Image (cartoon, rainbow, N blue to C red):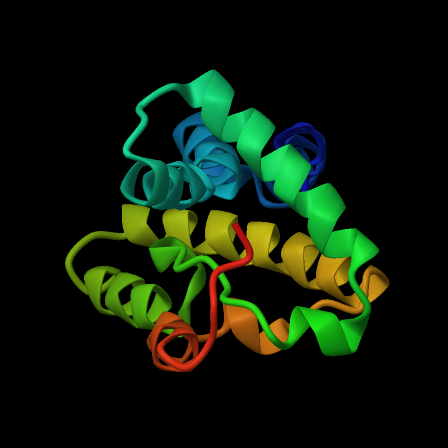
Amino acid sequence: MLPSKHIIFGFLVSLAIFLLFPQVGWLGFIIIFLSSVLIDFDHYLWYVVKKKDFSLKNAYEWFVNNREIWLALSPSQREKFQYGIIIFHGIECWILLVLLTFISKWFIFVLIGIAIHMVFDFIDLYMYNGPMRSKLSQVWVHQRNKKLKSLI
């Protein structure tokens, strides 16, 4: 899903949580919203590692272009290529966040924001027949990628 949609949906769901549960407070609302959007920073990190380019504009254009290429492939063609390793989108990161909630309650809000983001990512994957498992475990993605070629 494109960042603009994550910003809109993340804001609306964060606002709904704040209105339904005012005890979350403004700081909780902000943390939830920012977490629902900034989780995608890992896409930028993947771009930097892959392309050795720090331009945020280039990264955005690269991902938009690759999304179009990806969507043009049949599901069987998609299975032949590597997925990006996006470290904040896997269960490995979520487990760490759950453990951090025992240290500080603020991590609960981060976890809620990431859950909001992931729900919309899964909806997007479902709508476009994408592989759900690619967003479940980045260890799995790494193991899978060893056997396949890069799309770009």
